[in-house]
Image (tube, rainbow, N blue to C red; front, side, top):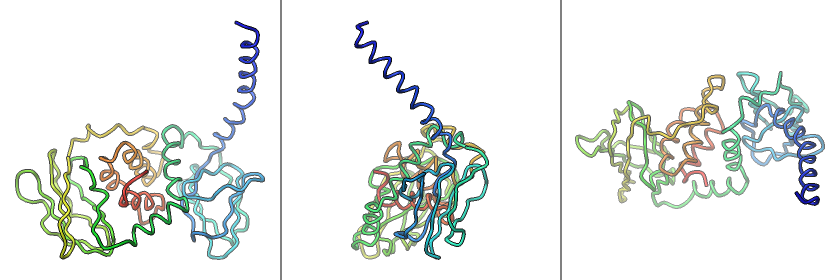
Length: 292
């Protein structure tokens, strides 16, 4: 091996040896993430040493991070992986220093890296502005969830659909390829409709959503057996994680697998939207067209 190449190789190995412990230490110190915060645009600060880190939904927090709130209406919710309940921080607590019993990186490893990164990107100011403009837009019915044929898992289950703009009232009809309709002209309003439990068996179905006085929008649903669903990585559904986290991980993973899985992801995350801000953010992102 030429001397110059050998020298460069040894230099690279030496640099990696120096950086690896620091990189590993940062990874091991990740103890949770930002579950929620309010209000948007408030002067909240996440400090990491002498650096200011953007405080956004699903941003990781490290052991020793400091959170500083100023106004009495400001509020941050942390999901620390060493405890079952979230930590609520308000200005009344003063500067809050993140201290977990032990680094719990093992609960947020593997596939969680890409999941949290994808969810974090949903909370940029640009994304928030775009979402707000879509949800308050014109009067033409749009159902981004059904823009392409969707795949659902068979079984007795409810079905939730979403449309835009939210103020439109609609009727929903669901028909199998053969047989009587499962849902016939059900009324929906507020941008979201949920059925009674439906017995979905493998096969094709047609969904029609009709705005009052407007033209019906129809789409195809492919219902398949559970073993046809992309295999969800085990680290996303560990029993040690809260149910909302497991649902969020599985739903985000499916939504990232392809547009045909958005409606299934929508179903999985919907039950947790009322009390879990990342689930609510993903829910409306899917309703508006999915992860970009």
